[in-house]
Image (cartoon, rainbow, N blue to C red; front, side, top):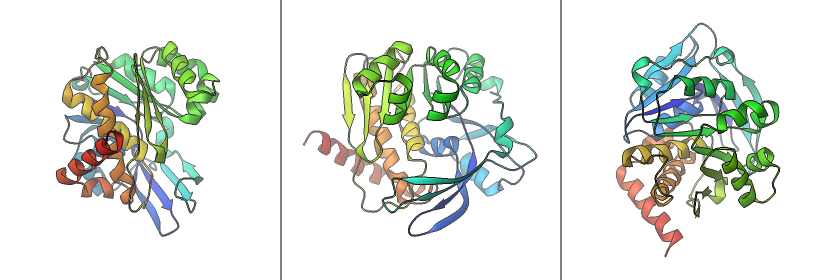
Length: 301
């Protein structure tokens, strides 16, 4: 079943304690599209400037339909950041929106009946506009951030009423609800609309708060972390790809979402092993199967 992802297609300049990479492929939609590859047609919606390299667009196009990525005059969205020694904390050095500042997502007519929709971290008004164009997807998932929680709370709450799954980190869950307890925060979010809430905990894994149950999935322990940029978007790609492959809709029981949590975790584990999407591209089916088996053992020896 087809998946539409709407988000940024961008360049990242990333500095880690070992290396600096200038203007490498980044953006939420880019990471998602590569992560979800092979699990159903992935349809990518975004915007790039005339500086965007043809080889980078071709790379995304090998894994997703890029008919929804517009190329317009101007500079592509560019983010620059420096990671601390622990490769967890980071400082944003620059955020240059470029053509992304005027992004108005256009969903090709043939894509509007797609079964799955992932609204990556963009302005809630744009997320709502996309959802208005879709014709009854089986499941809608949304990512957001503290900026929208603080500056557009009414718009965000309005779109949450129309969403099935919300992905947030711990701080965002608490900021959105004012609750210190993650359990209470998840319950408060569910009351806003999303029946299921995923709380991303970085190196400590993720929590799925469902209708009847809670699932805690640990993160896989990696031998080497090179660049963690995009890992959350890769989790979303693996998660949504798994749901699409299995045909899981919003009315499915919590148990139907458990495999998707595992798939999201395993998929995300390859991302930090290289810069940009290098780690994802090196992963093959055998490596995936080994990590899935390891994760299952970690959860239930």
